[in-house]
Image (cartoon, rainbow, N blue to C red; front, side):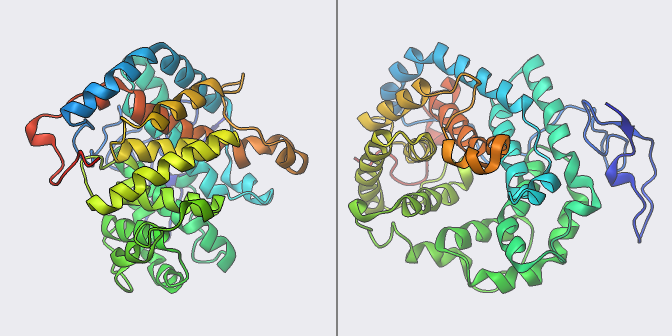
Length: 382
């Protein structure tokens, strides 16, 4: 591995960031002290909420599941991490290949963020080292091209672009330049917002709040027009609709960072319990680990851990890991993309499966809540 100057330390119009060259292997790109911290320091997350937990009766229901799968969970997540460690995601190369580069970089970052949250000691240090390698591209000028890129690419990249900054912020990484660039593109973001779907507007409502941006209209009201609010007929939902449904749930819980919330009404939860049961069964039958993982994660978010389909979905995911540690089979896509199918398709599936396994089977996250930790409204709706 060669040594090169850290991208954040390159000359910039308004100022010069002076620092020594940094070895990329094992360090964040701005490994010198360009900002307020050196990248060799341990990462310190900015927690979004308390440690996840469950109401006592549901913790009791989850306990046999987490205990029975303790070894399989550890083996599966370790193999998934080895696959991630071997995967190179260059967002600039991905875009040249017709793959959404920023999206794929952030998917890899998100996967490591999930694993990092539950790691300790040497394992956590190794994940931190890898995170620094993954985010190095975000300190390069060419990564921040959102003012000049085409409308198509802007729309494809915008959600992931903001997500990347948020996850880096959660990890305690330097995002000063990144946040500055986000501020510059607010006008362009606003111009696209009316074209966004329900769950995207909901997620941007959260991101706008995180980054101190003024909403062009009330983005937070989007869920009132979504599939959940309209009690969409589950039997008629397409796969795209099923993804939209899961993302309405993901956004409401800030992608698992706010499992202390209880954002849905009792009527919503009754609808979702039946809908998720049916959809898990459907996508297990079609052997789709990507959607099964998203659906099972949603069941855990909603605390439906006593549902038989929850146990069945987790068993399906544990039983269907590829020999290389990834999840998903994309033979048709491989004909078009060759080995880039790993970044283009297998990465997303592996990311969502790892997330589902961690939120569902990491035992400290599935223990009984104390009285002060319970969500503010009913949490054990049947």
